[in-house]
Image (cartoon, rainbow, N blue to C red):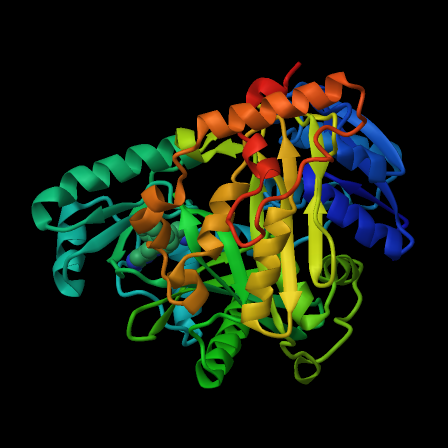
Length: 502
Ligand code: MV4
């Protein structure tokens, strides 16, 4: 087993990885940019090293610097977390060349799954269903027209090196096709440095369902069931749950077996996620492989009992997966809400700044993977994710109830957050009935964003300030919670109120 691992990330995921290392008796090297000097993740590390200026390119994306720090500190492996260098084949290769273990797939498998056209072909050859569309790259308008006519409009243009919806264009008729290809190419070029695009049949209102898989260096492969990720906004997942409310046992088994086929076909090792689209007739199609530990991995951990980061480290160290497929089952139901420093009332713009008061929920079946503390300044340079709130219960209904209550007891004052937005999603009939698809947020956004009551907030803020001036310790602890059945608490609304900054 490794003695020392460098964690090439920040925030909640760096902490999550550090905790797994500690349980395995591995010491940790944390890294930080100059603006992250006081970041929470550093408190969980055995050693810390500054790797550069705040701009990601100068620090968390600085391959040379990170390899150099790993060498100097004697780290035998690097865990990249998610985002930043996690799916960068060049970084995986640089680690391999420096004899440092990259905790993830090999650079070849990473490059393969990063290329959407190549991975479509690879999995198709293994008998996996793919969305009808182009199987070779082309720049000829004619071949796009021909394929669009073959699969029928609407179609979708996608970036081959892309992901996360960038470079995607839905095309409803042949007269829009040429301009959409050009727009997709431009967006792909600027986002991924590669303008290769291809065309597929467009699937309307699909479910986004992904399967967690693990594969070791001995060819052992297991799946850890699905995550339903259809609650998204602008291709950002917001809420995930497992089991999916729309899968039955037959379909679940079929998709799980297919996910393992995908991972075998790509000769992929370590933890990975196989994404599928499920159409309204319950046909499923391979979408892509996410070659990293994902943000939403905790819900899988809650229902399977498997520590995925531990398995990642063990696989990377050349050990076998600790269990067989038939030892893995889904127990109960888990939901994750992503907590962001953003302003739902202002187009979800990031809302960095000082956390003046923080109270995080806990209780039976409540897990908080958090990267923040009271008194810390959320910097503006990175993704504004603050933490993840995960609830588990025997049933879906109880899991929702726990999430609703835990959100009500999640108090973040000083910056704007999406906590109120998340609470409102929990109260929609679509979510409660498990009857939602990928367009749910787009179709309901205006109902989910509050018209907030400025006078009410001003009164609470004034009350809080006067309490503080009287020398009471924690602001507002003596304020009564309102009726717990109402959707907000005074605490929550204060999260939207900047007057606390005094
Ligand atoms: C699609 C699709 C429909 N048809 N592909 C989104 C992210 C990327 N991983 C793939 N995505 C999609 N691919 C075909 N052929 C629908 C999505 C999709 C989506 C599209 C438009 C608006 C919101 C969406 C949310 C999730 C998935």
